[in-house]
Image (cartoon, rainbow, N blue to C red; front, side, top):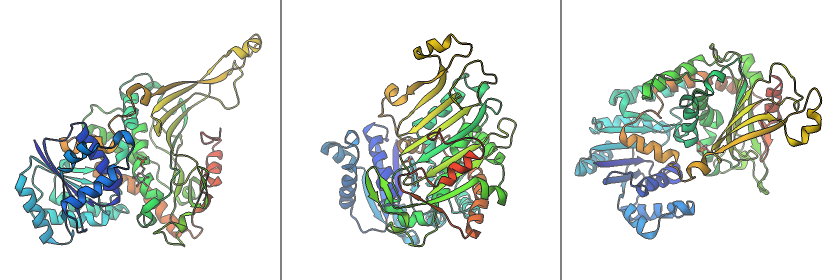
Length: 488
Ligand code: BG6
């Protein structure tokens, strides 16, 4: 089999940070077809040799275990090519078509790792140059558009030139091993299913915390913000994985139909809800890992008066029989106290107490997404130290937990999210990609929050870098009588 993988944005941030390291791992694991060409496309003026040298520099920075030896890199470099292109120029697409004709590959993947504003033009140009052949697949990076209207416009154009099964809308959270394990936990094990509902679950918390700032992406981030960058896609896809009904089989549309129902069941916002149940924040200078770091407005590429949010905490509800009344708290932010992505499922306390248990303690399932990948089940037990008390009528219990560490069990060198998703595109598997109707529902749900913020002069609440965000996020959850997992 032969493959041409065209990487638009071939020198950009995503190619640099995620795609090239993932492609190298796929190569190292022997997963790329024998005749593969990876064609980096960008406006830079680079020869193949210069592009290879640039990517060599990148791969020399990754973790030691994932770094190529000189011989390995030479073999990988032979796959790398570069084509200078301006995405607005039809002639440049004709040159690309000429290059692709040389190999007549069985499979052609066009990865649009560019600004979403270029997607429509790029797809139109691909079609005009006759590059939308049946063996072509197009990968669209998130965020797809900046609101519902722009998302629809992109999807409409793309659908005019490609069939739905040729369109791969990526959300790399779906490719994470920990998210695969969430599906396995729910749909490969019967144990939790009877408990997975409003009668037993008090609330669910999704935290995606990052301790780093906007790094070199200040200009992009300042036009995007945490709601569009993380909530509309990654966090809502996690909500879907947690709340969806079991699909009838593992086919892409069976899974996507169930996810869509969750998105459609998200309780719509009212203006009052947004004021009470959504908190936006922006990091100020602070200390992270013992080092002083600047505030968001002092980052390169960021407007010094910016009102872009770098933190969001919100309370969502899913209006259906399984979940009515169960709060789903979502929290994400940059420059927080730790890099930690986790889902906490807080079960209701025992309905009648015959033991004494620590205040507020109940069962809890923690799903660690990163940096750790595993499960913790928190229970209450009677420990040695309670033997005296156990003689009384109401013995005291102690919190304990069962800990399943997937990195220890399966090794931490498992296939990473981007590698997994790239291989799925090459094989034409759509299960872990997002359908256009899912994206539209997600935009429809977040849009009232965007509108409300636009009209609200108070702007985001400042929080010191290295903390867990504005105190209003704790107050929001406390109003329901709950607390974030690190606070209670
Ligand atoms: C990206 C966002 O989609 O996801 C980034 O644009 C964010 O801002 C990143 O840092 C987080 O991904 P991961 O896999 O590092 O959690």
